[in-house]
Length: 321
Image (cartoon, rainbow, N blue to C red; front, side, top):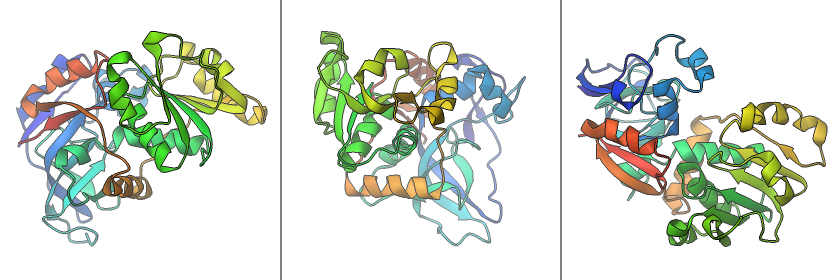
């Protein structure tokens, strides 16, 4: 089978299209014929080995896993002897960060991993990008214990995390203010927030409103910069470590700051409950992943280059033929 392979850390050019043996499913696994995947920030980090702390999990000197692609969608081609949840021919999608492999024509995944059937009427491409950004957004929502009726600001509402966060929050009846740049205002309005702020037209912090939670979905702000936006007891979350890695120690101090403005830095969890929750939102139409561009697997290096410009809107799909 064809796969996008990299054997050492580095820039997009370390990835090459290569013929490799097709995997065989174990007794509890599915063999999936991949039809679509994505290139996202997680893949970029694993490919480059940056930040360096990632290498504790992926291999210090060289990567343990050579085929990336944490999101996938496709058809079940074969099943192991003990598989009961899926059948050959099922259309499935999932998230496989611990054991990636979506950048290939086939992958294997345990039946009890983060995998579910694709809802009727949803394309492989849409399903393939329904998990990475969304599961980070969901971890923010649950980490901050956000609930109906609260006021939440999402900074960076056009990325995979931000665009998912806006939709997931609205599905919970949260009042959402979304922040984006001028060219994307119409797109973000279509996601359903209660208010859209164009940060290129002025400082997004000077609009006279405070929030229960601020989600920095692109990691380009800081707790100090956003603190005036928070109500008493408000919570700041970011997709990045923050200046000098401050978000980790600030979040560790969070239990001592009940009733005060604080940082929460949740670690995302992906499991059956997560993907079934997202599947339900996709099936109901409450969550429609935003897709920016499509690339064939043969052009995956170009996809990586584009994602690393920081200019993508929503998600980048990899089509696997």
